[in-house]
Length: 320
Image 1 (tube, rainbow, N blue to C red):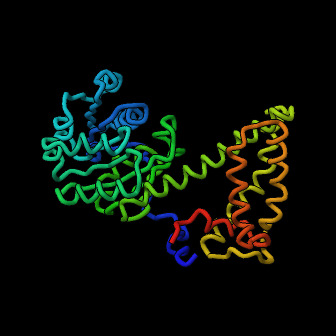
Image 2 (image 1 turned 60 degrees about the vertical axis):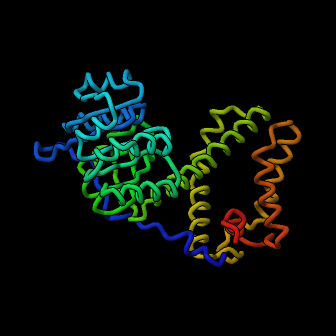
Image 3 (image 1 turned 90 degrees about the vertical axis):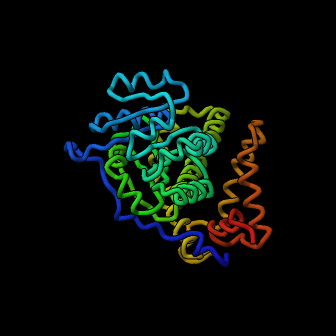
């Protein structure tokens, strides 16, 4: 855990965050284009149109732009033509490979000079940093973003969007990005938004896979799912407390058992045996349970039986 403090830093809410405005003056309107009009891209463009921006759109399947054209957008035949109309370029396509294919074409790259690109395509931190480097070499402003919401929340205060990259790019784009929800600039490293995106999704997937396991147990034991669901809020404070404690311990490198330990690895594993027993007895799929069990056993084999649950952190950390 030599470098844990450098890997896991206390998260401080960034003061550079804007909420979407209630209205917009004529002087605040911007020329914006949206590249990619799938469900999310269409939601983004629709919100921009409602906020009185001048919006151009492009999609590989042109028919997907028609509903936005009916709302007032302009659909142009090529990516380069679309980029040329705008000061701020919103990109929301399937992956960075497709984004690079579209933006790196010579005519498109020329059209981007002096503009600000807001990359809202899902990708890795390394891809975000590479995209920023490519943009910086060509005099293109670059802001990488992560949308932590589904399309139905875009345009409301329930939508959270994280942005990273030069503060100047965030300032240039903020009249557009504040329309989508709560916009937070998390740092100047272009990869930070993607890193947070992956970390937050990892926690969500952990909960969803855990819920799948719980549904399987309920089905095997005849527990009504409505009954199970009613008990979740009652257990939620315990889960939140354990989660908050785990993050704080990882941040502070307090992995050993102490007087504040909520439950040792030994105590957790003893209770976990009951899940393993049901899985075996009822012949449920053991993939999730076995994965968790392997982590417990690795920690116990290393002498962490009486340590805090946080002693599992090094098992998933980067190997030296």
